[in-house]
Image (tube, rainbow, N blue to C red; front, side, top):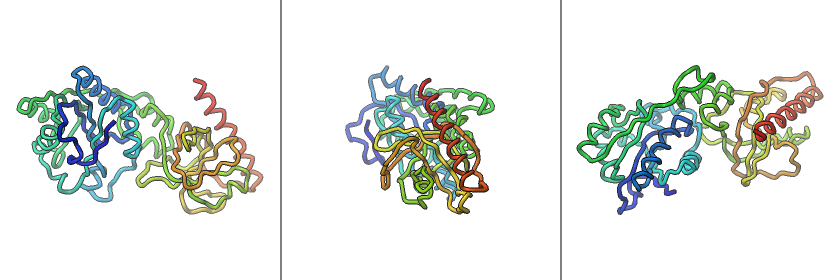
Length: 317
């Protein structure tokens, strides 16, 4: 899959293509429907499928300081899009100047002059251009002039976790923030992932017999609510069942919020300096301060057993 940053990286000889545009944070099941349809149309027409997205998130430029927590960094989104069959991802730097492009100018500069769109596939609520004034109706109206068609894909409705709402990144962020990682996974179609580099912490886990990877998460990452979770730690391409702790470590009066993952039943792992991924499967319990180290160790042993059982049951499905 090709990856471009900025319009200038698109090959000069790029031909017609099927295009879809959006932030696509998380590449959740609603996004998958839209992107999947774009890929399907591209295969029918014998042209490439292109996803156009933005960096940073448009809200940070329009309303500085309002950057939403991110469900997936751009490289992860690209990986997920490649799995869906996308041929190219165009990341447009979202600047103040870019934000002032009118909907018509956006269509001409991006879809017509550079990507030579033959079909544009979007969700029903897609908005674009200065002050988000562009709609799918306007997009279709100009398609008659610039020789492309517009196809709108209705988003499905979520199940119990979403309360009957359409799939959305906003809803997923809320569920993650509340610690409902199972509900978030229902929308994402996979467990929520947090990534970062393993750094040295207080090393108390090692002293207690449960060495953890202290993950320095990427900026703006959507981190689940404080608590203990079952999930997986992936490092060097190896996916290991894990007990994950999110919080300030109240047992030792900590103040810094961290994400730490203990790779269950693994001995001698040296992960310092590695970029790792932590996938959250299920909430186990909240953070708490115990009356003694012995009580803490009993709780950790119970947590690890529950996390081992939960991940094993999930992998056996």
